[in-house]
Length: 221
Image 1 (cartoon, rainbow, N blue to C red):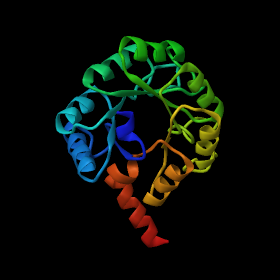
Image 2: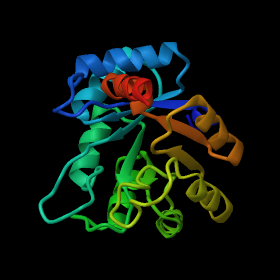
Image 3: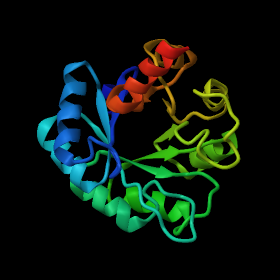
């Protein structure tokens, strides 16, 4: 599976409740379209979407579950129970919030449970170099730049965060994934040239309302 993903494009097929394409049928169709376009993997949110996508495509799935827990900031698969549900739905890799944000469960416990009990690989979604190093020390299977710009202490970083990508690749031996605000084929190609193991692209492919807005705004400028 790791060889399948290397050097390729993973398409993040997600639509939250307030978005027009919310629903597992829409996301499964989006995943199938992504496969037909040459994607090597899919990133999906929630057991329902993961199950439906699994029926439609035979690509590796990076599964997450975005959930808010009162009093905590970490929201990407924050607990053992969330990880278990994602694994049972058919995810091959489970991505977790591995930032320094407050969390309902210790990261080391979560990573150990996913790898040792569920028998799945872990992708650590981080926002800083130090978080990436910590994820490496914990033995995570992948480290993604996913949350750069989304934590309170990284909001001012340039996006996509090529600097963070370069730093991680130099500092850790764990495969590094380029994810977070990649909006063009040129940016994705640059990430691979820097040394990313693979690239994850979401909104630029799977959120038509954002794609439309980029055209509208561009035509006005």
